[in-house]
Image (cartoon, rainbow over all chains, first blue to last red; front, top):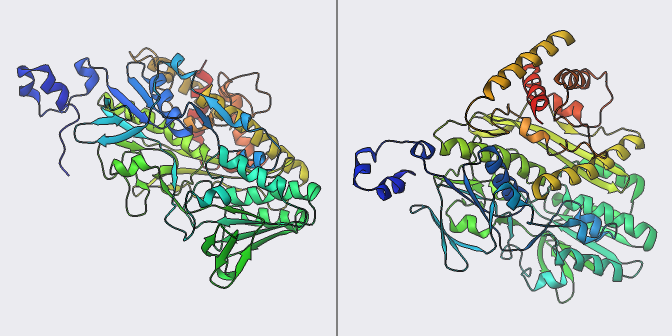
Length: 425
Length: 103
């Protein structure tokens, strides 16, 4: 695809003399222009990218486009479902970003013209950009699981975008009678927060153990393996024998759901749930598709150094929407990617070459409020993809004293406070 | 071994100081590979006691020594023993020096 050089508009705007140089790639800053960076999405990825870009190079003109006035964070939202945490602790405003000199456009982004380098806003206005960063998070695929659509989610909550759905699932569990069956439907990879369904099962089990001890949890899984599996399964054996995991090869894949009867059908069986938590397959947030950055998988292939789209020049994708090699879709990864991307975008805007990065992901899961486990990995570009650095990372030890689990639970808490204050504070 | 790490860290710092006179007033101008990820857990705020130690403004020799001990298993770890193995001694020195120079 042939596109005009990013600097071309400025040259054209500058008038006749510009024509002489129109073909020469000159950094915007060398021309005295203030490069415009637009970021779509005000979550862990988008807000980090915007603030980091501005802090890194104050000469950048940075705008965040986000329709919601507050952000409700997913990490720790399983605690909310289990009645261990107030949803207010998950919610963050955008009041602080102005102090970094980042502009907030509180509206939806409805279109992207990658040739003209403009973003169309819900109010019809257009924003020009030199570099666009997309951080739209996920879109739930309401076309992927027969019977499961937006209306069905009111009966069978996904609670995979934190907010009202989180509270709906909590209310259903609170209203359930002792002896009830909670079914969690876990999707195929890739999806947001790989260990999330299993942490959720654990924390719901923690709630049930004291409040409704005769109840049961069934995980119907479209996979045969999952993140931190041994750690979860060992802990379940010890603490929550009422969690039953049904893997893909044991017939766990859900083929259809019926919200009218709260029933989930696999190829072999029908399971009637008292509470059905259906986590459907996912794809990149809609604007990523509109911008032409998604591939057939529904996610966005990216360059491992700059996070620039493999498909559309001038657009970068970070966070859950991106295909970032071996990196999982986590808030930690989103934050780490966004910082690397912000520096790359700033360097590209002034005609410099971004350096080869390394990135870390760390992801804690809670099995109980005082029982934490983690997985960590370090990534670097190998053959055009982010790959794990050999011999590093891994999960918490399988055999460890409860003091270590308690330490990890505390680190999980600290992580949430630190990252949310870096992103929103 | 410890001594050479410390010396390396100090050399790293002087390079950073030299870089500081370049025109861009940018906190992250010379962040070495991996450094930007650390602040996901390590708060720059000294009053956050629930988090792992502050790296910002910390003596690079101490950071390097701690990481070296995590790597060798001398120091009990929760997660840093796994993370440190993703970085070479040179990368660790650079990260420690960069954080040490931050305010």
